[in-house]
Image (tube, rainbow, N blue to C red; front, side):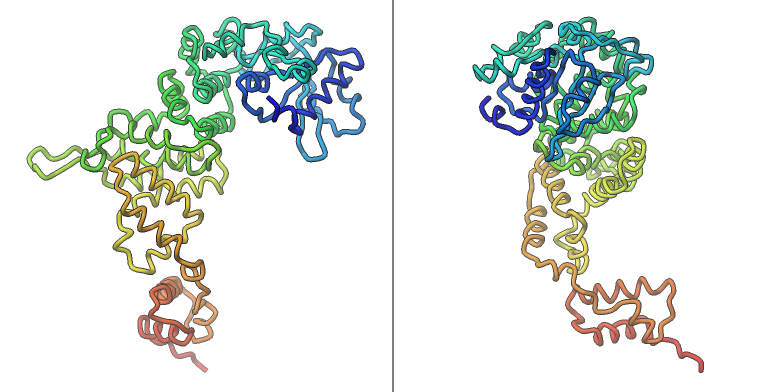
Length: 465
């Protein structure tokens, strides 16, 4: 792929390979970058596999910063001045994986084939000779394939290298990676590999919650979120990592608002519309926006022909469930706040055309309101497809200048104190009322705002002398 040949990351990795070869070591591109080059995709990064030991790699690039991120496992980072880096790993054979994530010990080898056999999937187990690739611009001609990765890639099959049960016993995270690769690359998981995932799904709890969170986030943001979560469900992994989502299955919704089907189907339609490389908080908001519906489902009263399915309080319950999930998965405070805000406010669009002007302006100035709009669009187009409320909110959001939505306050606590009001619980109500009046346009100066407060809350108490 010509564009890869000219990329800085490609050139940096190519230089490392040639430098290692010039002093007598084997060196190749390895892993996902080879897969992507065969698919005609631009790799996100380039990894190098070599017969050189970590000490050799560390000493071979005196003009570059080198870091031992995993010397025990034979991994060294060679860093560039622009902040990018190339992972250089020594050919190795892994020992036992007692923690279900990393080998207890490794043995370095000079045999590239031995190194490939300890990797996860055939499509990730290929090596590429950049010298041949440079000459031919043909990734297939430059590929060393000891595991049948090219055949599987052409057939769109995801297959574990060797015994799939052993591969997943070594590293439980590989089960989630299998789902992510299958979804992202539109692959079918080979039957024995799929069976091994189902058999070992309950052991995913040996993986750190942070790594589970990161894999789920990648699934949500790589552009194939629906397929990823349907695969998580069919493999049994979703029940282990996000049981709250499984409960959405079969929870019926009122057909007049949700002709598409139950809560699970509705949520999957939202995920299907998530763009690649989009906002992770919007993606999690889409996944969790109706997470409170299963717990609040109420069937229609059979004696009332006008009654319908209801989910009274599903937003409040959903917020609590979402908080539990985000805490469990160790989300940052910043991301948690935004995802919870999306869940908490997604039903407020129903009232947007009837809000007081002050209420509407406060709504529109929610942090990252563009994500609230985006979630509402996904919600509508995955249900009744009526965009009236969306268009109304979008038009007001895009047309209102920032100073109209959040103007400089005409009245602050300092002015209230100066006027003789004593600080206390009422201060918040007084200031909010004054700001509402300002947003409504009924007061336009500080004097008018103070007069409004005096009229609404009474004059300040007389101060003793």
